[in-house]
Each structure stands twice: as C-alpha cells, then as structure tokens.
Image (cartoon, rainbow, N blue to C red; front, side):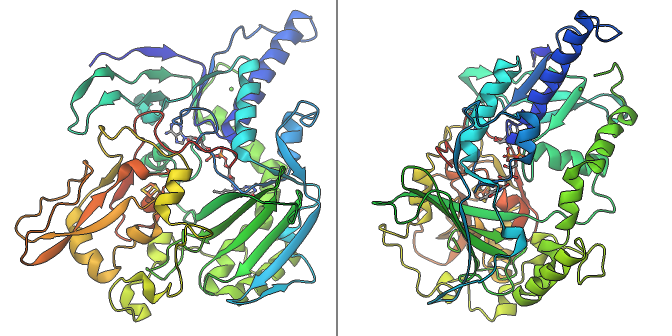
Length: 513
Ligand SMILES: Cc1cc2nc3c(=O)[nH]c(=O)nc-3n(C[C@H](O)[C@H](O)[C@H](O)COP(=O)(O)OP(=O)(O)OC[C@H]3O[C@@H](n4cnc5c(N)ncnc54)[C@H](O)[C@@H]3O)c2cc1C
Ligand code: SF4
C-alpha cells in the first residue's frame, strides 16, 4: 500500500500535559536561539524553521485527559512564569486541606494532614481544560497539532533506531476490509520521536520490550481512578477545599483512597483511586469508586542526565517506595510512609529500593479468598445502583460521551479467548468484567454446540442466543464503550489482552475532567 510520508524534525506522540509542555518549550528555545543569532548576540548558524508535530488519538486536545487534579504549579511556572495572567484555566488555589479515615459508617478526621497530602500553594484544576489551553499555547508558538491521529506503529531504521511513527489507517470495517472513506495512515518521519502516551502507552509498551528498556528495573505499578463531577445546589462545599480519604471501601491489602475537591460554580469533583496491584479478583475499581545535527542515542543521553540532575528526580526519589510500602497492608504502609518521609524515601527507613510486583502477578485466585464462583455480591453485598447517587458503569460511560465507530476492528486483542472461557472462569472468575470501568468485557452464556466462538479481533455485538442444552461462557467485547484506561492490558492475569489504538477520534470526550 502506498503511504504518504511527511518529514518533521520532532514528533511528539500524545497531546498530554507532558508532551505539550515539551513541544512548547522546544518551539520557544528554537525561536530564542534564532532571534539571538539574528541580533548578533550569539555566534553560529540559525536553525531556520524547525517542524514540530504533536499527534493525538482523541478528537481534540484534552478530550482523553482525565485527572484529579490538584496541581503543584512548579513545572508550569518554569514553562510559563505568568501562567495566571495568561489565563491558565485554574479552578481555585487550595485553601483548606482535610484528611479523613473512613470506616463503613464513620469519617474520622485526622488532626494532622500527612505531608504527602499537604497541598498549600497548589491549585485545583481540570487537567482536561488545562491541557486544551496548553494546546492553544503550542499552536501560537508554531507547533503543528494533529488530533484524531493515533500513533499506530513505530518506524525503525537499521540498529533499531527510531525514525518516526506511522499513524493509524482510517476507514477499515470490522471484517478488516476497506470502506469507501479508507485513508491509509501517514509515515511521520522525524529526527526525534518523543513518546508521551501517558500510562501503559501502546507504542511505549512495544518499544520497551523491543529495546529491553525495563531490564534490571522494578515493574511499573499503576492505579485506576474513577471520577465524577457533581453540581451542588448551594455552597456547602466551597471552591478551594481539598479532602483526601483513606480506608473504606478498600480493604487493608488494597492501595487506594478517595478525593473530594471544590471547584468553581458549586461543582464538586470527587473520585476514588484503586492501586492496580490489588489481590482480590472480585475487586471492581469502579465500584470502589530537540537542537544539534546529531540524533544518536549518545547525544540524547544528555536528556536523561538533565532529568536526573533536576528537581524532578529529587522530588520523585522521596516517594520511590510509597506505593510499594502498601504491599504489606494499610497499617504497615502508613508506618512505612512515615519512615520514608523522615529518611528521604527509604523503605522501613533503611532499604533504598523496595520491590514491587506487577499488577497481574499480585492478583490472587478466587480460591485464596474462599469465594464460591465469581458473584460480585460476595464482596459488594450492599451495593445498589439507584441512579440518584450511585450510577452503574454503563451510565457513567454515557456521561463520559464515549464513542467509537462500531464498524471497525476491535482495538482490544484477546490472544486466546479459550483461556477466558476455561481457566480464567475457574481460577479468577473473569476479573476483566470487574476491573474494566466501562463494562467492555462480558462473559455471556451460549449453547455448548451452537455458540459461535468470539473472535479475538472482532467484537460480538449481540450475545448469541442459547438454544437449550448445556451452556458455556464466551467472551463478548463491547469495545465501543472503552475509555482507554488500559487497565485490562495491565491487570489481565494471563497477559493475553493487548490494547492497541482504535481509529482516530474514538474514545471519551471529557468535559471539565
Ligand atoms: C484519576 C486521576 C487522578 C489524578 N490526580 C492527580 C492530581 O491530583 N495531581 C497530579 O499532579 N496528577 C494527578 N494524576 C496524574 C496525572 O493526571 C498524570 O500524571 C498526567 O496526566 C500525565 O500526563 P502525560 O502527558 O504524561 O499523559 P496523559 O495525560 O495520559 O496524556 C497522554 C495523551 O496521549 C494520547 N495518546 C496516548 N497514546 C497515543 C497514541 N499512540 N497516539 C496518539 N495519542 C496518544 C492520549 O489520548 C492522551 O491525550 C491523576 C491521574 C488520574 C487518572
Ligand atoms: S482500556 Fe478499555 S477495555 Fe480495557 S479496562 Fe479500560 S475501558 Fe475497559
């Protein structure tokens, strides 16, 4: 197939706050350098016009960004010192900090706020709006932004050198045939390709494996956050108030906690984070609420050194063992967090680096919890969806305005659906049905002889009817609900789910998140 190729200098994959900041900073550095040469303040040759591109899989910049968010403005202030005067969309400075320990019936207010949760000097923001604003700043500085362009494949030259990225084809139907609107993806060739796909990036995952970038490193750990925005009838929860919670509903072996932030116009921002290294297979997190003509790796090494020498690494080092400490249960995790705070991040006050476990290795089998089958009521006895205060996943997906063209191959590749219908039913009770916050995975019962096999690449849109006789379970993938959180790719115990980018523009369309 003939593909158009476009030569850029630097291509950033993903229009999140990290990449947009990088692209904006780069565009400004190039301008400053060229201006200094033109004014004779600096010797050398002007760089001319450097082509910087940012590609984004969402329908617009910010559409796929969901965050808390309380923001430490340190990074933004380095990038745009007068960000307030320039109209950065900030909800409120943090005015009050509270920390609550929750039991099933009570909220116990902590007299002191744990230092990692002290937020004075920070801002409550909608990261989704802030990202859209950063996108505008990038465009003003001459950066080319291409929404609806998912990076589908890395392009390599000899010696595994990355030479750009191929964007996804458009207009392919679910049988993998071309539709009348078919457009092949473009090869964006670049001297430098920056991956800023956020957590568990689909290209990043493959690149890490290919180049062995995780050798000798601790496994990455992740968390899943579920967030809602509520409009209050009055000012009962003022803008600028920040509350963090620990305890209920998570058990002491599950890392997680909640937040409640007061935004402008009586909007309450609340959410709950579950660490994706939980053990109980019935857990349902939704329910738990560029500048020189040398692009060699040796030259780019200085990027890593500069990050290592900056405040970024110093700040992250202090918290390097925070999440790992909670592997030993909530109470030891809290003790560990205190010792880490005193000793600059050492686990138990002495160990430089505590070990982590990947989420898919941490999850235990149904039998180790004494569960009989996978009925979620065994863990969530009292949970009722009343559509007043408590909403089910499908309703939440509707509010997230999630949409994908249904006539395309499913972007969730399950490599062996027999494992789902046999081993996983027995061993883990198909936890994909629980951990997916968007009800994408469903095990449907079909007649043993009549049921068509669910294909790994095609979503089954209707559950096949069971026509009497013995039944078996079959995986049905409602891919159009997917909110792109990648939890399934992270937590599937058999590691047979591969999340790839769908056609550009598909996914959530978050507003104010
Ligand atoms: C629920 C929740 C609460 C949080 N609360 C806070 C908080 O209070 N304070 C705080 O500081 N941080 C918080 N965070 C973390 C913060 O949101 C992230 O650290 C931050 O968003 C990371 O920015 P990023 O640019 O690296 O990636 P992201 O923000 O994830 O952006 C990545 C972008 O790349 C796009 N993309 C991905 N893959 C591709 C591809 N292959 N091709 C094209 N585009 C692609 C995505 O659509 C997305 O737009 C929270 C996160 C969550 C989920
Ligand atoms: S990436 Fe999509 S399918 Fe996977 S868990 Fe998240 S919402 Fe569900």
